[in-house]
Image (cartoon, rainbow, N blue to C red; front, top):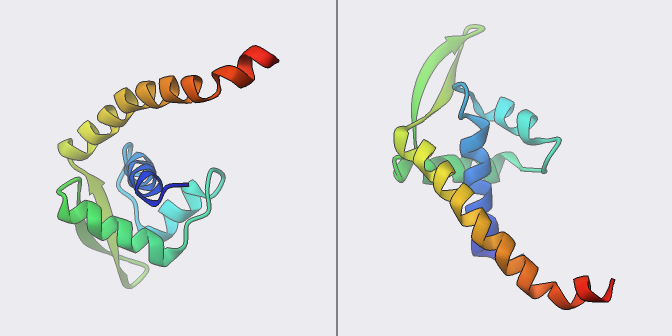
Length: 106
C-alpha cells in the first residue's frame, strides 16, 4: 500500500479511536487490535503528529499511582474524520473504476 495513503488512513483510525472518549496509548492499541495491528512506536509517532496538527490535545492524570497521558480529539480532529468520510466516497469510485473490467467478467 502506498505509504502516504496508509499514513492518512492510520491517522483517521487513531482519531476515530478517541472520538467518543478520551483514551491513552495502550487502550488505543487494544481498541484497534480487532481491525489492525499497530505497534506502540507507530502509535506514538501518529499521536505526536496529530497533536502537532491540532487534531488532538493531551492531558496528564494520575492512574494507579502513575501518570498517564490521555488524548482528546479536537473540533479539527472531528472535522478530519468527516472529511475522510467524504474522501471515502471518492476512493470507492476510484476502486470501482479500477476493478470495472473484473466486475464485468464475473
